[in-house]
Image 1: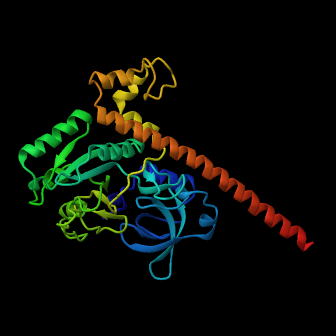
Image 2 (image 1 turned 60 degrees about the horizontal axis):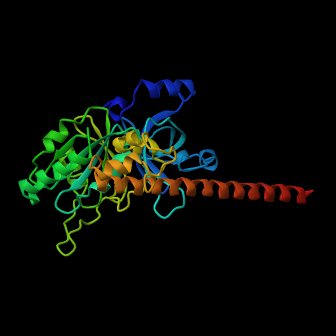
Image 3 (image 1 turned 135 degrees about the horizontal axis):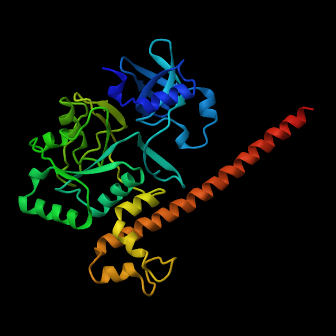
Length: 354
């Protein structure tokens, strides 16, 4: 194996040279847990942590490593390492951090493709699917829909689900797989050497089963479905990057119960392209598409040109995005005030010494 198998390329090498990082080793973060990291090279894996200055100068979550990141590090004491710098990211898949005002949670970085997995027997939800698509589109990550457990429903039910997807979602590849290994070869044929793929979906939809099939071995344990509530047990408890035998790179994720949308203007423009284009014909430039006269979007909903459920989902996500942006501004204001207070306290203590 060479470092290129992990996705390393000339752009990263150029940055390494330009920033004088040649004296450090380069590796990729394959596991993150409470500010402790596992960094992988083409030869070894290291237990790593940040150097003090990198942690001290961090202003937001973006300043800390995440699974998928390339980092400059130095080795010490029996496969341990210190991370000195994070390389530029070509993509960041993120969502609203659950229960945290105006903050984001990074799902993975440097991803080429998002594999959005939904189980057709219980988990299928078009609104949630559009949310995942919005997250991928906001990150400029190619989305692929993977419908799992198709052996648990009839062919008629499956055709109906695919028809609903095609009516609301355009130009996104949809694949189907079953517990009987059907369809996994088709997914595997799309995996390209050196490209990074991120598994996305709720708990129990078959992400770990898909990962095990693509890797050819049991990387993750799979859980049984509870017959009483028809929900899968939560198996994956952390994000982890795994190199497949064919050279592809896969990032597994814990199941996401909430798919909160963060700053996703570009994502909305792509996912709801028809709505965005029609909005240009509205009478008012600041039209909210909810009650205004001569609203081209509302007219399109009334005459069936836009799916009513897709429109409702767009309005909900748009409001959620606005709330997040407002919360983020408020959080920055409070952080700035707190920073000023800390500086004033330090200044006063220094004066008191004299």
